[in-house]
Length: 239
Image (cartoon, rainbow, N blue to C red):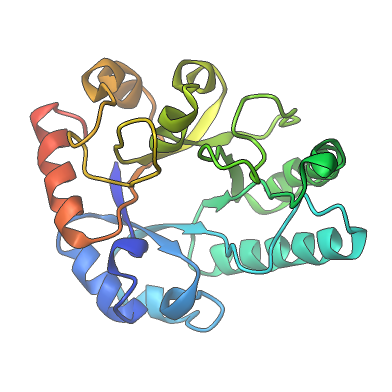
């Protein structure tokens, strides 16, 4: 199933964003920031005939924090977001892997991230919500830009565009993918452009995308790119 991230409609209230998505898709990923903060609008998703996934907040959340109180607070926010997923019957929670501020701290941040990840499999087992760690683009402060983190049995959100900026798409495809983010770029910047407006060979991914039964989310910054990508996927017979 091809779904749409609410981020393409981030300038609209969540209700209007979901109304627009419902016209073109049966699935929406709620990007839980700003006017789409699921904690502020827990009842709105029930008004629409949509299957949901949720993108966890990024503001004030760092599961790789080298400050243990911050890491623990981030884990609590993840648990609360899982509870929100249960309330709207969302089976997938997309989660960023965290970040570090100074290169000196990268190893400590990796240890903190792996410590956090070990707890997610238990949460998934208890709740049925699959916590999928997202690979990140080529920005130095992010972790999990390369498949060098032990996911301890958890699946990933394979962000195809992010992997293109790090030249690691072939490596990430080998991991267990529980969710996809689809967009395009030229391998240099994380542009989140429409499919066909970059150098990602989506035709080569057709078999993988069709074989994998997980939800594929178009993650764009505006509705025009959403429509262009939907047309491109239709031509490739990817649904």
